[in-house]
Length: 504
Image (tube, rainbow, N blue to C red):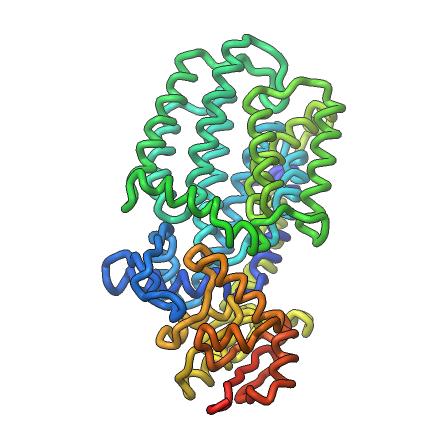
């Protein structure tokens, strides 16, 4: 097997992305409670429908576990190979997704050289979205949808391949709520190509001036889209899954209080890359002096609006917009896209060497790597929980609670996720199932966290123990230290446990 020299361009980017993603510490928030639900589904052979874990709400308070299959798969991986296998699966899924994004950029531009900067931008703006949680199942599915639709509308894919979309949707709708974006993609391509066919031939960026699709192929695309919508009904809630997604997208606590649902601010590397990508894309489109295809215009407007509305959506914008950016670069620098590239077995050897560091930082071997001490301070080492667990996770504090049970516990929100997994008998005050709890309860949580009316509110709820994070809740740590009503019973570098003194 021989690779061309230009194949190395995107492989360098992909290897760098794989190395970085493999070292992302596992935060407590969005993993452990999903893992517990997966365990419950596995052991009971049924999908839970109620709260179960929070002492501040009735145990039978209704809650929809809409990503049940994603949770079950996470637990099966955990059961087979522990946390190491789960983290490795995330790494593989992310690399697969971005390789498909690179293939789409290559499809748009005709050049691996021009696909490489598009891949770098798409990966760079997504770095804060790649933690382990059920969303990881959506990444390759979304990228595969986009790749198949791009090839089909460019006239390079037989129509039978589109029948994969409904089958993929039947899986996707049960693993993560981003299945909606698959339906959006099919709808955008169907509408955009119908408009292009109705308008007749014309120059378009990223389609190599191919003729508009015949109406027969447009009709096939629309028909497959209808089958894909029907496939989305293959879930335990049926058509009710639409209401579940709508409720989640309009849930006030999630939209107002969770950072990743907020618009991306121009700070931090991923968000800066996002803003730079918009500038570069606009410049490339302007200087290319060729009109956007209707499909491309819909993709850019729709997914840029989505990304602007919340940081958690930037990854989807990156996968859709950056291949269009690569196509615009082809119009700007056609000679660069057409540069010859030699095939050589040496290129394959170089490609394999690129991924040696990626293999060395996989969870089974990363502990032997001479990484900077600054990095090792971010994760727990030497615990049976598993590798790369963030120090934000209250591993030692929960072991103390296991040995000293009792009381009604107020705690940091992310700690609630780990408590649900590691110590479910210690019911939680709140946890990352944000939509489960009333907005006023979240307001009280924030007041207590800031040390505002904390005694009054804790007494009102009946909480007599506090598990806090000294970095995320410094005000609460300070006021408890000065309050004679409270006594510290445990402390480590990150977590503290306080109890209210009896009779006070």
